[in-house]
Length: 490
Image (cartoon, rainbow, N blue to C red; front, top):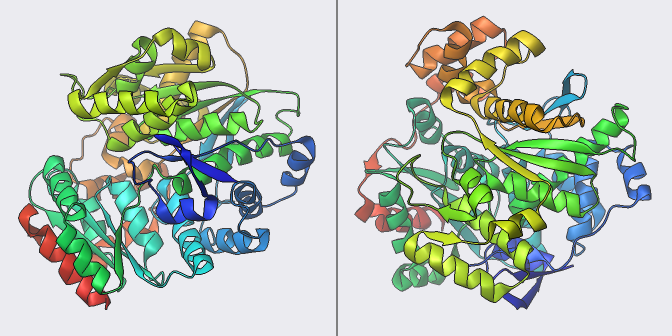
């Protein structure tokens, strides 16, 4: 299978090169020229497979340069430490299920991507005969940073330096970054805010001198994030698996459809579900659920995508990149995508005809939940379903309730649960008990005591681990830190 850039349909490369390159040099995204369609015999076979086997089966449809046995060895190793069948589908009521994506090491959905992608990347390099060290410089969200660091830890031929800003992470999150171990990984706090870190990151990537110095030492500077095709593939796999689990549990038959409700802080989850639907997974409607940072709700309702709105704070860069892939899906026109993305980059905004969104994506519905509604629905989930939901899952359940009332749609539904309740312990604890606990460590312990849920191992032992990366550096010192880290790899 070949892949093209969203900004150049004439640029066609293999799946192998897509995994290695990540992002096209033109700044777009790699997407498949076409999508495989799952037939009845495929579905029948998938019903008898484990999650690891299903994932290898789907990967092989997109990455035909790999053997199924190679992919299976990767997925089995990647998900060996996951609990409860990797991605359990939890039925809580008639016609209602939660798809839990958080049973990996870091108790959030990013584990599913970055436990596998580093192994896939390593195998792709071996197949191409590439010997240099790939040094990934990242500055993502906490969940993505931590999952990438853990995923690449001790993977030969790779190294990762993660940057994070001092004002954007909780104390527990900082500890998890500072206690990371492994000779090929490093975390650096940067004094300042999100923009300061991004500026430092861009200056390193844009420095010909730094890139040449690294190249002279057989090190290639690279980036990896949640928007590359290698990151989207594992997400497609868990939607396929959700359908298979519905069949295996006899909640639906092969002729039935089901709805999916997705928190859209990570729009890649929505995009991946759209792609799974293209492959023949019988998704009826996709309900997108946001919190009060509802830029995507506005986009789907009005056609206006505005990253500089006065309300609701900053927008994740990954959302804008996933929107680019969606625009390519809508228009199939790389020139149109370039024009739109240029507008976004220059003025922080673009507008498309909302009727086009309705015409091309009639099955996508959007909504958002306020903080008060999220608090209320966390209580509802516990009282009605005996289910403890994190803040993002609660937002999805709240929006689904509104959708159900407005649409009277009784289709069986799967709600995506991206995070463990311990990802937002203070919010969940306050909702359930009415008690405010600002100390996150105490909130985690109190939440465990109240719910009976076991604290994830990473959080349980965090206070006892040695601090390996403590200091916060000035943004102007990032370049020197990158070179120092690179020297340690030689």
